[in-house]
Image 1 (cartoon, helix red, strand yellow):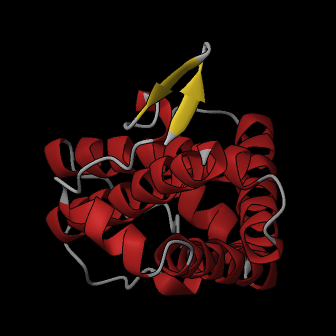
Image 2 (cartoon, rainbow, N blue to C red):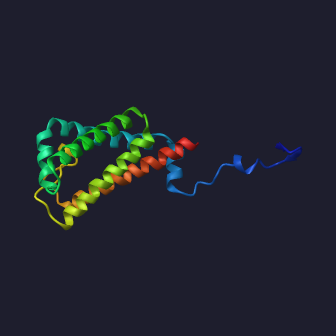
Image 3 (tube, rainbow, N blue to C red):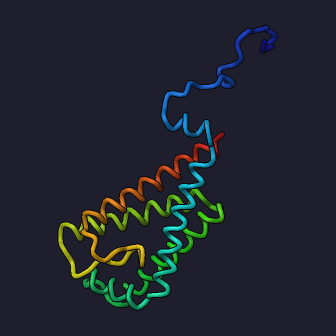
Length: 172
């Protein structure tokens, strides 16, 4: 029973009705509403953190790979690009691990993975001397550009899934 506007009604207002579960994601989120997005965020955070740390450890190798992959840019631009990539990966990994600024970190990861995917597609079309080493020690040197594209797109899909599931949970 609901008393609204002075009228007794048997049905609650539409805003309070429970929506039907008509999507697979609704079923997943009803069982464990925060488990799936947290696992995705932790996994992506681990990928980015390990990637950033491995680039810091092997900084000369990462710089060499960038010079080989992007010979059209000057050394100053490539140094700045290397610092931006490493810093971005470390910050994204830290933010996703600590559950701080999750929406921003997931959007940043999607942007960074999009850039990596575009580079992999470019490398697939116009082969270069070597890959950029975009994932540090996670990147296996003997992977073909097609496999790299698929890996980047899978991680990009996980990033978007994490972002939309996080934004959906924040609304509730």
